[in-house]
Image (tube, rainbow, N blue to C red; front, side, top):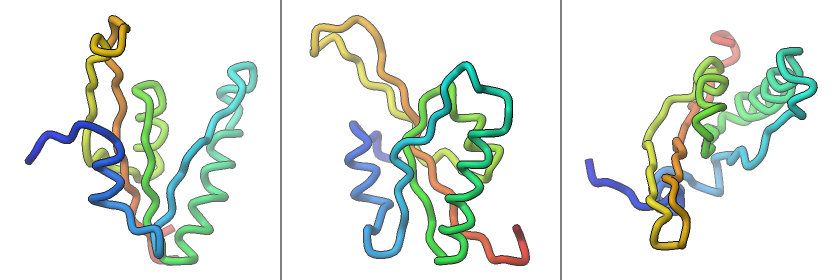
Amino acid sequence: MQKVKSTVECKKRDYNAEKDMLLYLCFVDPAYHKQGIGNMLLQWGLSIADNNGSKICLVSTPQARNFYEKSGWLVKENLEINLEEYGRSEIYRRSWMIREARAEESL
């Protein structure tokens, strides 16, 4: 598999704006974590995607990856970008994830 350099490459390869959905932001204030709020938001979006027969793509932080995996997303690509060339010392880590639409009977 060819190593991708950015989430833009992943999106071009795997995402079709005519039929797929892109989860851009989903977060809950840390003061309200572990109360099921994030899962409720996510399930709402998943039901819309499944009813439309749409797969959903997203870019996940390392901290949120397990949360998305529990709801059926699979990691398609792990990205690691060295930010030294931009004046930073850390590695930017993200996972490009995809969840295929599910038929109503499998929900």
